Length: 230
Image (tube, rainbow, N blue to C red; front, top):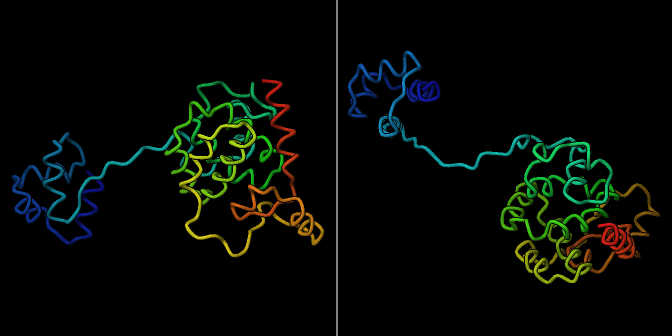
């Protein structure tokens, strides 16, 4: 009701005029908006919104902690709990870990900053593959501007694990137009790192428009170790 009253004031409508246009008793409108209390029906609320050109909209509620980017250390702990070969699995309880799709979406930015997280993502995606809502994961990755990063990791995991379904899940994320210039996956700190990236970039990363100073063998080694351990 407070939001509705603020909208009324911003549109310059008097309570009496809003009541008239809403086809509601003036006393009802005055009581609801003045007291800010009461339990109006949905029809009453819609009736009061319509004259101001407003309406209600259904929206997906965020997970706990989704309002702002999660703390990187917390993301690492969540990833470990979800099957990534990282330390911290026992640091949180299951009920404290957000849904899988949110954890992986938050991890994408971190993977562009931390090579250990980048290597750990394919084993984690592999272990979670049967429980992931792929359309939701793609949506969350796109919202964060990391759809291309997710596509790369899905296709990489598909190749490492021999799972074509993951490659198919990556296809909607592929840009419609090929990038003229590849972007650096990790931040480059020296000319030497840039030169090494030109040599070491895995073919899959090139297909997704990335250069990285990390070869395919590094991902394969982590994936094999994690598979033996799990």
